Each structure stands twice: as structure tokens, then as C-alpha cells.
Length: 175
Image (cartoon, rainbow, N blue to C red; front, side):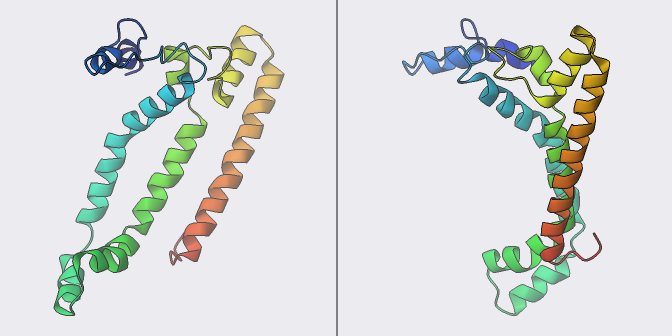
């Protein structure tokens, strides 16, 4: 996936800049410009995870019994009211799962950074997991890399607990 997107986002010959060229827009060098490189990685990361998350949401929607929305329609609820008061609350466990796993995956992003920019340009895409990789395998400072991994674990753990608490306040008592 990363190599395909590296071809699409190439500043000189990339498909995306050629597409922009049809409209008279000169596209930037997405992966070599510090202003755009992190945004390019974020967009590729979202695109990469979107299919799996949609599959999970589709399964969550399939698990909602149609009798709930039918009863709401009989009571006079519109489409948006049914969504906000029935579908969305019943999708909260699915939303929690997708939010937590996407957050953990985002904090551990490494492969796209390595393949697309190798931490550059000028360190603008050097995320925590890439820092750990560089420290351990390029600088051979294994203790420092282990400490960074432990700190990253603590940050992810604390923020995941915050997410669980926020969702619990919304009515999910089982989590």
C-alpha cells in the first residue's frame, strides 16, 4: 500500500499531481515537503484503515434488530431521530472498539513512515515508533529504545482509559 501511494503522491510524476494538473493546479511534492509530508501520511493511514473499519461498522449495523427502528417509526420518529436515539446508541460498543483500535494503530504507526518518507523530510514525519526503530537499530541504543517503547505504552494505556471512561459516561456500562 505504501509503495502504491508513494507512486501516486510522487511530486514529479505522481498520479495525484497529474490529476491536479488537468485543472491548472501545480501540486506540491507531497512526500518531500515538510509542510505536506505528515498530512500525506495521515491521509494514507486513514485510507488504509477505512475498509476494515467499515466492515466492522457494517457488522455492528447488521447486529441491530430492525424491530427497534420499526417501533420508532410507528411512534412517529423520523429517519434522523431513529439514527440519533436508536442506531447510534446501539452502535456505541462498535464505535468504542473502532476508536480504541484506530487510536492504538495510529500511535504505533511505523510502516507507512518508513516506506513513504523514512522519517523525513527534516524529521517532519518522525513519529514515536519510527524514533524507537531508529534508536534501536540505527543508533544501537537499545535501552533508550526500550524506555521510549515503555513511555509510548504508558501514553497509549492512559489515553485508552480516558476513551473508555468517556464512552462509559455515555451509557456503556459493560466496558
